[in-house]
Amino acid sequence: MVDKTVEKLRAHLGTPINTECAVVYLLSGVRKLIERDGSPHGTSFALKMYCHWALHLNLDSPRTTQEFLDSVDKFILKNVFPGNSPTWPAGYEDDGTFSFMDEHYLFREFVYLDNLRRDLKNFLSKYGLPVTLCDDDGTWFAFVAAYASVIEDGQLAIKGKANALKAISKVVFKKGGRPLIPSPQMQFVIEWNVHFETVGLRSSRARRTQIIG
Image 1 (cartoon, one colour):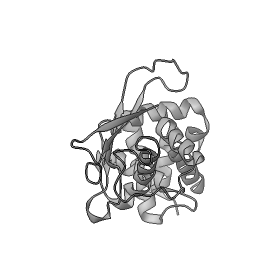
Image 2 (cartoon, rainbow, N blue to C red):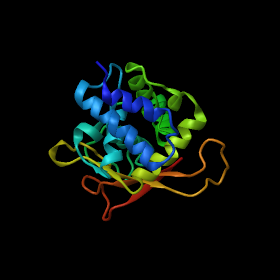
Image 3 (cartoon, helix red, strand yellow):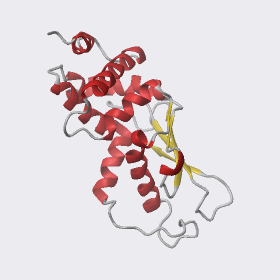
């Protein structure tokens, strides 16, 4: 029996995925299959989160955003609020689980959406769909450029009691202009605007920092 959803995606992947409409169509189809069949083995948070983000500008469900924001929170605690600083969150102790390699992988995610690239390739392979989008750098960065326009000004947060973040309250995505140093891969600047949490920090006002790729 022909799987109509899969075949629609196959036909769609035969065209350039380099416009906002093309990106949204692809990720909405992927999301339908995830909801129907579940996530393929080895898929991390990324595929679900980025599919949801393409359809909903602001996300705050812990099931969708928790894993990513936990990593950002640990990065900020380690690099922006070092131990024993006046702004160190009360009662927080670095458990040493966020390593140099974790920082490297998070940086790659900020700049290139590496986790999405890996997860999407695994997902497409599961259904026997073409993976050129994920394998070819030029094709992938064209996809990222279009996707960045889709989620621009969108934010990630965690709603309610599930929020266990120590340093941040939300992350807002922005697509900037051309980078200062020209790159054949990325023709624009990605900005992750990290908003600091005032609760638990010795600060009288909300602050934010930018992680720019």
